[in-house]
Image (tube, rainbow, N blue to C red):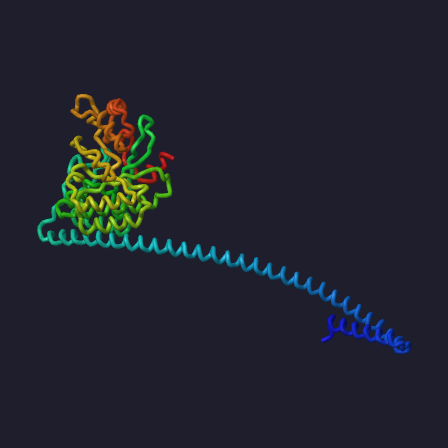
Length: 402
């Protein structure tokens, strides 16, 4: 193919030929070669012009291709980034789904255990039906609230049916009693109580089912049921007022239930966010008599962020340092011990000792203003009792403060 190099070679040949003819003195040949030289020069000039044109056009075309390629790369980068976001969202949703499925599996295992325990109690009641059915007697002064209405007596069979169906159909309600800051009396935390409703929406109180539970050995089962239900409900409330903590009583029967408690502990360990909201409360007697295995379980939960409270304190000579090492951060003492002359306890000394271990003292069961005055004299910062509020259905208790 003819190109610039060929044109240059031809031009050089023509010039050399002209020079040779000029040296030989051949005028006619020189004239002919001169004409050829002019034609070749014009042709060569045209080739140069065409080549320059091709270079300009090629450069422009190349720039357009690069621009198009850059545009395609930007589009592809956006698509990749978009797909990355989608993949991240899918992965996040998958992780959430896996977590929710794991939580659901954990809940179902506990629920199955509770239903089996209730079924065992139910079978025990059925086997006793061969004898005349006795109505449960209402025990006096075991009410959670002085304003609890009197309810009609229930048979053991009726109670087992109510408990079983309440668990299956989510008719176990959460009631909250405020723990207040003193002296402002602002609600800062809540203690949890549970109430069971029958199929007609009627509330069944502890005084109605405790005689049945004690007689059939179902106390542990009912405590487990109520404890588990509290954790379920509190988990749903976790997005509201995150600074508020919920105190949840854990009885000795639940602690010593070898079937329930390990499952419950696993459930708590897989739901670490609950540690920011739940404070598990134990009676002093249960803390003192706690087995080594239970202590290890509570320490494992404590290492995951769970904290504890001790109430029903009858002996104030407990080891506060040891209590703090077991992740106890609250101690509740009945308000009556703060009344002057009613106790050998020096509340100020207890408050200072607890403060040194970063354990908060809460005066509980406060029912009159006289007790409040004595509590304030001892510089106690928190109080709880019917004077500050009775247990209310969770939505009402929360809304009253907002």
